[in-house]
Image (cartoon, rainbow, N blue to C red; front, side):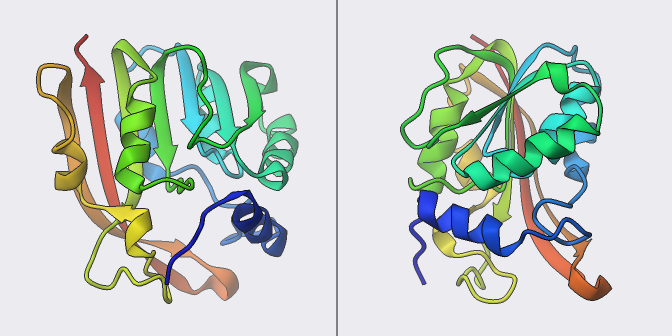
Length: 211
């Protein structure tokens, strides 16, 4: 199965998951890796690439960061802004509708992060692209779907083109430019519809830009 991951695809996904309860795309809590991987960082400017429902961007803003949150889906952004209005620190958030495969922020950031974002470009090339938006001394945080032998796009397995391994991601980072801080793979569960447990195979990479 191959997905285009274009604007029409993501608008359909968000329109089909309008409910805001647990397990819905717009109702999930912030990714658990975010607090761990940003602990000890001094709040500054951040970019959330593919912010979706905004949980991670809102969490960062509530902890003192000034966040630019970009997503291709107007439906996702509308829901994220609505959630931010009642979640604290909306003045530190800027929502941008953008196709991340072609859009450029025109600036660099102290933190660039992405959580399960899949634009209409190969996954590893997307990570290369957003890495260029990290300022010297800044942090790149990637949380994605782990590529496994079951990455077929069926059930709870993402399609292969939307997944990666920690080794594949870090292999593209020049050691003269990047210091790898975290390169891990995890299995966790998320509460889905009806309270059922949904398994997630995650890859987590954090790196500091040397120059």
